[in-house]
Image (cartoon, rainbow, N blue to C red):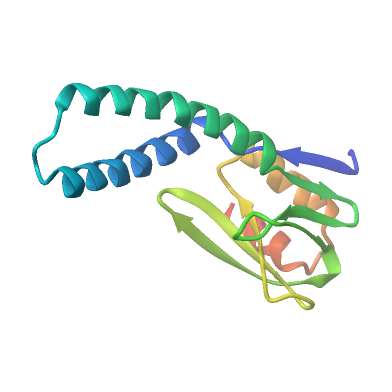
Length: 150
């Protein structure tokens, strides 16, 4: 087994999350700003541009927000997007979260209040579980959670 494994988020669920919430916010702003007098041609053109922008953001986010598991710990990100590292022996608890259909595990440590947000909508969830079960110590909270809940 390798000592490093990197996992990226699936692009399609991420794209749908970005385009759905982006279009919703955009529509609310337009309706409020225009007070119902919407130029539908401009509105559709703007939504089309938003779709292209969402594709770009999806690829950038999927490439940037990777999680890497090593024999010593987890490299990931906290909620605000700051890179974070946590050794396996620092993990004290794991809590599931769901943001707009994107599932995460918040991995908490002894030394920091900010958790690592480990995405579960990765390209190969079975490989993620296998790698964690191989690399993490036997009583590790993340390992136990993934083996129990898949």
